[in-house]
Amino acid sequence: MNTPKQLYIATGIAILVSFFIYYPVFFTDYAFTDEAHQLWNNKDGSNFTIFLNHGRIITGWLFDAAFANIQSVGDIKWLRMFSFASLLVFILVYAVYGRKLFKQLGLPAELWWLSVVFIPCSLSAAIYIGWASCAEIFFATTTAFLSGYILFTKLNSSEQYIQIPTGTLVMSVVFALSSLFTYQTAFGFFLFPFFLYFISKKAAKTDRTVVIGIVFYLACYVLYYLLFKYSLKVYNVTASERTAINIDPLGKLSFFFSYPLAQAFSFNFLYNARSIVSQLFYPAMLVLWMLSLYWQNNKKQVGKILLHVAFCIGFFVLMYLPLMISLENFASYRTMFAFNFAAFVILCYSLLTFFKSEPIIRWVTVTASLILTVTAFYNYHYNFSKPLAMEYQTLRNVFLTAYKEGDSVLLKRPPVNAFKPLYGINYYTDEFGYPSTEKDWTADPLLKQLLLEKTGSREKAGRLIVLQYAHADSVQFNEKRRAFSGLVIDMEQLMMKNNAE
Image 1 (cartoon, rainbow, N blue to C red):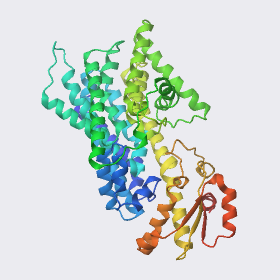
Image 2: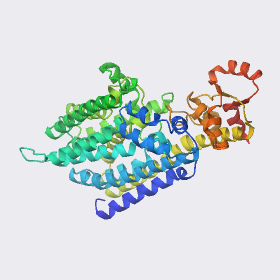
Image 3: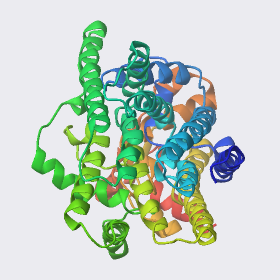
Image 4: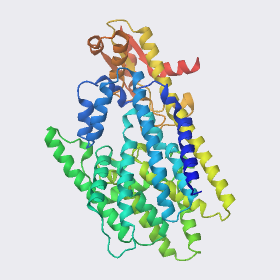
């Protein structure tokens, strides 16, 4: 499975899977949370500033230019298509260079195959493509991988002294900074070649290749941080509170083991902290991993196995470094692609080691690929795209039909679990199964944008008054609506009615 022919087949299948899963991006309209604000404020420079003060100046340039040329909610799909195209580019880059890595390190070709298929099927990919506000992340992931790959190819040498050409260092740093200034957590993919190297050795300690790679990785963060601070001075803006560093080893490790690790070892299934199945599945996957290591070591060297596991978890922590030193403890899927990818490779490697027959290994690989594809299709269509499209069409139809010039709008936002009775799906962080209009910063710009599209007048749209209440404030909402003369919108009620028709 490591021939050039298999490279074309694996890449082709991954691309076909991508189209199979994400074809709705070419025609589905909705504005998910931040997108409404970014679209309505597409001319005031805020799309640049908000990313600049988060340390993502490249994303600021991209989004400032992109949204300046987007005129309607329907046009947002072009940014999602950009993200989809970036996915395809990453698949091609990873398939070619990843194949070389797996072959060089003596890792199973089937493992490489599964890792290629996992890219479009991952939970993070669904967010990157379905949420235009995350359209930059595949670019950041691609440059992170190239940065690590370029350095690794020079470090992975049996020579006594390693000489790294200046050009290699410069190129690796440029790619690293491109990734960091686009989306910080994507830079964790830099470590993936070094992670593969470590697990291929089944080692209980690190060697110079891994150590130099990690030191370089951390040095890039330091250089990035200094340049980020400099960029704030140049543009005379203050950093976002979310960029503040919080050194709390015990607190962060507690957070890491409670949510990120659980999500990463849930294969490609959404992790629900309120579900017994989820609570049991991820420890079962951890046990599977450790049993496979025990099996590979001929049921000996338990100490070596535990050290290997500890070092692998250390890699995971480093891949997730921005969230391990930030103020936030929020394990969203958009931050976890590198971490999830490494954990997925570990799990698949563990699974494949239990089979010795080549035909069986191939059947397992095909079966796992099908499970990934079906799960990803369901996640994107039914946990993300379809509910959001319904929510947007419900709001759009009632507003365009019932709004009269000069009206104010009284709106009650839906509860966070509004899609549960409609589609039987749960919500996960602020991504899957999450109603867009639940956020207090969505309804106002979205309704103004709809009025702009209806009248063609930004001045009229800007004068629209939107009074909104959270679902928890239903009593106050009902009191207000008794004497309200404008347009009243109860999102939960409208969605229930629309779904029943």
